[in-house]
Image (cartoon, rainbow, N blue to C red):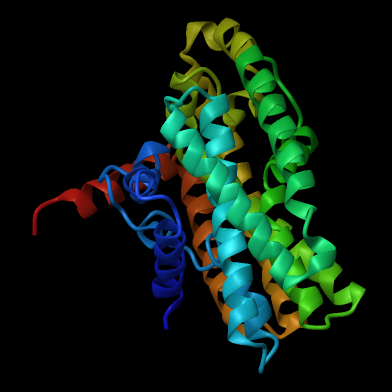
Amino acid sequence: MSRTALVDALYEAFVGSLPASLQPQARRLACALGLADAPETPWSAVFRDAVTLSAPLLVADATPGLGGAVIHDAVLAHLLAVILAFAIDRTAGGQIVASAELDAVLDQARLARDGALGRVAAEDASACVDADAETREAVADERRIVLSGAGIGLDRYVAVSLAKQRLGLPASLALARAAGWEPRRRRILARLLDAVWMGLQLHDDVVDWEADFARGGAWAVALAGGAASLSRDENGISVRGAVLRSGVLARLLDASARRYAAARRRALALGATRLAAWAREREATLRELARHEGESPGFAGRSRALSAWARAAPG
């Protein structure tokens, strides 16, 4: 079974375990969270990269003979953790409308996630509870920073962004423990995943910065000096123009490429060759994008918009 098919099958099994009254809401959850346009978009169509929804499979790739049931539990725990992380983020940002039915589905997802994680490695059964708290705190920190309009440094941005990704670690680390990986290999795995999540985040925060700013604040603006500073300077030039002239977008894309390079090296060290190949492709893509952005500020956003237009255009 392919990775995408596995993700969708595991989610459908979760939906089937719910009371009948909650199943319709669960099937349109991606749309309800603002991650898809069509009501019943499968999760495999929401995130198309090789890691976001199925990170524990890289442990399976590097551990031949690992049992199927424990892998499936780890992927389910991870999938639901990612969904819940986005729910935390979208709720804090006011991008979704809460309802009793939606809250009930998310509560069931949390229970199923924790149960699956406990079946993978009992020692890690509470790991997502701690990660939930760290994620919520980081999301709140992000909102305070970007809404303030103040400038910040890259180190602060990275620290908050990594804390937002905490829910992306427990399932993979639990599977590595179940597979008998020694502590050093598990630490490499954690750093590998941090590099992947940060690579993805940096890219997203470049191509989505204008939409984020329209909703109240964006990391790119904060990293370029802050909205208040940018609006006062540049002889009245717009915040958008000031961000583009600052060169911050190219720097963030270059930082993303460096994170993918780090992920590639760590994947090779763990024997996760498929992930290493994916990270190598992403590294090359981001380096090229950073080069174009440096030569023509705003290129990344224009490229993203053109790609979306091309996908939506009739055949």
